[in-house]
Image (cartoon, rainbow, N blue to C red; front, side, top):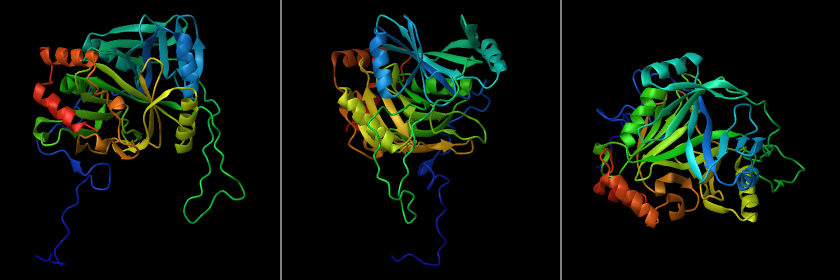
Length: 382
């Protein structure tokens, strides 16, 4: 049947051409809390423990961090942008992620969290400005909220290359030679967590910290059961924020998946990756460009096998952008780039992974069932 050329165009989706083809349907999760306790402004820093701070410092410098302070028991790392430290590593018996620390918009927000969540308010530590509230999310991850912490002034950054693109050249009589050097980290971007209590953890971050969902992912053919991954950003009203400051997905693990750090541009990502490769570090996946968030990405493993990401050119959304919905799949993780690796996805059936799965399926408060686990494995099979 030939379409009638006089017929009106079908109504365009509110998400068409924006960041996702589909928005929430009636009765689905709204992606934000109606009346959150507070609205955090950003991530402040991430907390880790590692047994070998010398080795951690060597990798940090090769990855592009600047060391802001080093003692026998602590390593503090920053980016070139003005702000707080990006990472705080304390000496510990094993390498592990401790938890994220978020920035409160106002000092009174800490009092609200103490009053409403029974949290403890404490000074940051001897010789350091600021106060912090210690919380624990439903997955058992320690979460800090800080206000008044010391900040650094900006440092000289990596120069963005002048690009000849299109009909208006900008670089004349000059060759392009990006230096082979670390990709200087500008700032902490986001952290990704895995949890078998996905819905409980999701609602906790929305209701407690005021984060809002940029995009939900759901298992193909199972949208009626709700999302299995969420990309959450800070609600700054009309001021744009990163597409996601925190991402989380359903799975048998509890805690850290990877963390991401902004660098200048694609050439910084690529040249910095060459620099890391020459020093014997392992790429986990990349280089490519994501779909949710649009970042150019490159993932590496540190000497303790934790995954860290260089990224550039990510999406920025204000609070007016509604939540998108899309099916979850391995191929849907990137617009272009090499196929996602099993090493990055962490799907190899190691004894530790099998124990993790067994424990998650048997837990009383788990949201992970055998059927959902099988569907997750199928969707994320590269």
